[in-house]
Amino acid sequence: DAKTTQPNSMESNEEEPVHLPCNHSTISGTDYIHWYRQLPSQGPEYVIHGLTSNVNNRMASLAIAEDRKSSTLILHRATLRDAAVYYCILTLLGTYKYIFGTGTRLKVLA
Amino acid sequence: DAGVIQSPRHEVTEMGQEVTLRCKPISGHNSLFWYRQTMMRGLELLIYFNNNVPIDDSGMPEDRFSAKMPNASFSTLKIQPSEPRDSAVYFCASSRAGGPTDTQYFGPGTRLTVL
Image 1 (cartoon, rainbow over the protein chains, first blue to last red):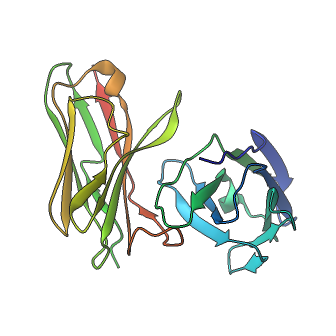
Image 2: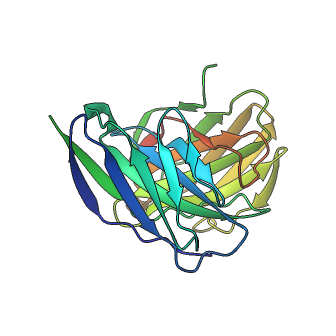
Image 3: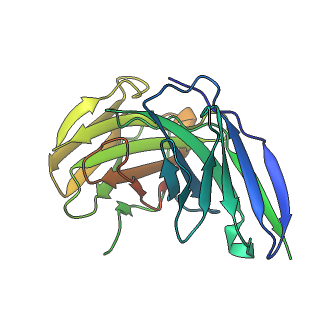
């Protein structure tokens, strides 16, 4: 399975944009890129996913590098409620399996 | 929608006892996943069901662990006998079809402590 690498932790000020990076240099052409986050004492929740093109939804944006070896989750205006561990996950086309890495712990400062 | 429901939310038991964790997936979802989360190993997939049939149980740590899905609205994860190293948070998740773009919806988890 392709691996992902994320920084262990990041900090952001409230109401500022946050860019969370993820490296996946061994990604294959059919791997989807998913982002989930886990708020304290909760189960993971879906944030966004994409294959090749950049994606936007009400929660965030996903910017995928042209060679697909990296991606960035963008929170446009961080709030205190966005403090969580953010996981970048790859799934092979035709499979269901999520391999969770250690994720990035985002701290949002008031 | 009630979301994925897990019970109990907390379980404290003594080594050697049988533990049963329960999960009710979201109605209409055909795929169900059991995960375990520990500080040391992070989130690990234990077993995956599709249409009530176990498809992949390669993550089940050993024979002490078993999982069943008798119908589309209920699944159990049983540990017998339990050991202190089984202490973890166990999550159940469901998705519509289990495909690579299907969102997995996680329950709140069961925090298990084995003394």
